[in-house]
Structures are given as structure tokens and as C-alpha cells.
Image (cartoon, rainbow, N blue to C red; front, side, top):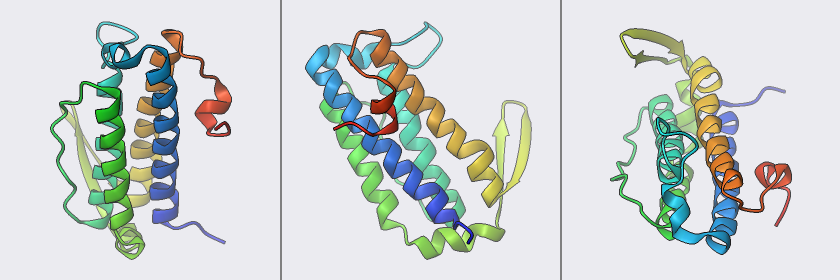
Length: 163
């Protein structure tokens, strides 16, 4: 049995966003909106930036593979509530893209610039080698920011096995 591009991407993104919403709920109870500006290092995005990049990675990956227009968000969230709303909007958009459109992208090639270089991927390679790892980088970094700032989260929270 093979897995479709839609199953490999949309389901993973939606699950990751569900986890982020749970983590943000714990953040709201711990330090509140002050955590939105928290970061691990001066040259890294803050919590808001990590969630914005996770959102952009997921929606634009789906858009590129499905050859549809992805929504544009302003990157102006300053509260946990606004970050949760962005996540909800991202998930709603991902759910609106028909699985058939994503799966039809299997034969597409996707070219991305990385600094001065350019790389061309098959759609499945783009999702598996770039988009999903990039998404999880930002989800993990958001988790790390919260944990570093004393929010009571652990591995089971990251895996989504707590309530």
C-alpha cells in the first residue's frame, strides 16, 4: 500500500498545527503574550516567527504541489490568540484544497532558490526532503522556545499524546 502526497503532507501539517495549538494553550497559562517575543538566540525568529514560518511552509508547500494559490498572511501576530487564529486559518485553507489536486501534483517539478543556488525537486522529493523537515524545524523550535522559558511541556506534548 502506498501513501499519497496528500496523506504525507496535509495530514502531517494538520497534526503539527494541532500540537502547536495545545502548546500555545499551555504557554497562555504560563507566561502569556510575553512569550510571543521569546527566542532561543538573537539571530533566530521569535515564537511568532516560528509559527509564521511553519504556517508559510505548510500552505505554500500544498499550494506549489497542487498548483493553487495559497493565502497570504501579514505576519503581524503579537498575541497567543492571534497565533492560534493564524494556525486555524492555515489548517482551514489546507483542508479546503482537494486531496485530488495535491495527489495530481506527483509528476510536477518544483524549483526553489536557496540563497545564490537553485534546486529542482520532484513534488514528492520537495515535500519529503524540504517542506516537511522545514515545517518540523519550526514546530520544534517553537516547542523549544516554550520549554526554554519554563512552560511545562515535554516530549508527549510535542508528539500530541497529552490533552
